[in-house]
Image (tube, rainbow, N blue to C red; front, side, top):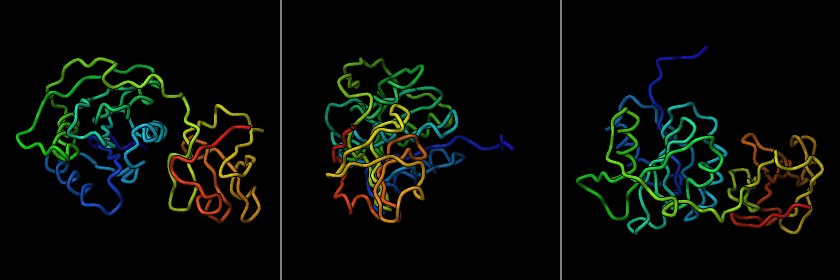
Length: 249
């Protein structure tokens, strides 16, 4: 049964770090400016300083959210510089954040999208915390259905056409040591083997198909190729980290 009384949803996607005060400060702004919105923490530990890797991670996880969801996305090593602040409307979702390539993969995989530059500025704007002072209040306004000042933005200001459609590297290590890659499993055959951390890995459908302590790859719940060890840590066993390359065999 669908609950039609649920208000707008705002999703946080940042590299601020789990347990940092920055997520709490952004949530405080969102609760103040859009008190009827449900605020969801998707990632607080997206790839640090790496808008490219984070873009593939975001694209894989955004699909689960309902139309009308507003994403506040902050992986922004160039904060305070000349990268634009932007809003991207894509396939019923709204993304607010830096125009540094973070939304490239979302746009590329969307049926339709429209990008705009945020020209609105708050009275207080810290040069180092646009997440709290610019992106969060802009997202709250959009979640309320209010307009903010926007302007056209050139593709060259935020697009990254040279990035691959799929990224052959580890983009995230989870709590269990599973290594998520930027490769979509649907683009691979079942008999493909993957080389990572000096090992050659066959695919499996579930953890139980691999021997205890055995390393393998599988299609994770968000459609990405994930490298895992049955009841172990692929990160530790294969010496994998964010940015580690993988190869298809």
